Image (cartoon, rainbow, N blue to C red; front, side):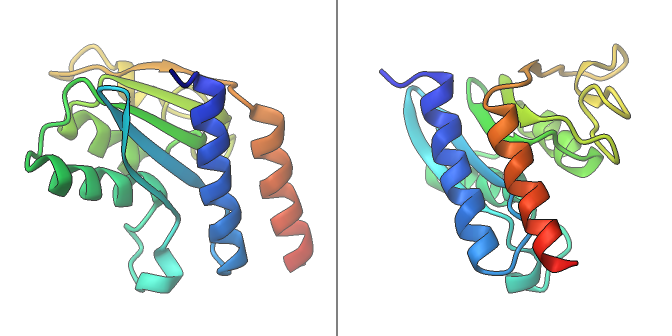
Amino acid sequence: MLTDIDYMQLALEEARAAAAAGEVPIGAILVYEERIIARSGNRTIRDNDPTAHAEIVVIRGASQVLNNYRLSGAFLYVTLEPCAMCAGAMIQARIAKLIYGTDDPRGGAVSTCFEVLSHPRLNHQVAFVSGVLAEESAVLLQSFFAARR
């Protein structure tokens, strides 16, 4: 049985692959019933799609695999705190739990800038854990942007 750290390491692999493709290095893994259903890194540049964040790509992929737009019981592992768009998609998909690496002080919608997943007026809240392999996730992002400057 894999642990949160094991799954986050796989998400980091996806983030590294995204960086190698010239994308912002964010990776995601969706786990359902202890199986990896979908995995991806950011694809916004490759797909010419501003919505192709790693989280959205794996939610779309998992929905196709499971033949259901509701992903109740699924766990989503992401290297960076999700933005408002991705947090909204998690609510719509009924993701059970989010596990993420590092906080995003410029747009994090889980606990840093906004608290979308736990807003009391929404019809679904997503449990979350932050800080899993946070340093590795942050270093990957910092290195990527430092190399681009």
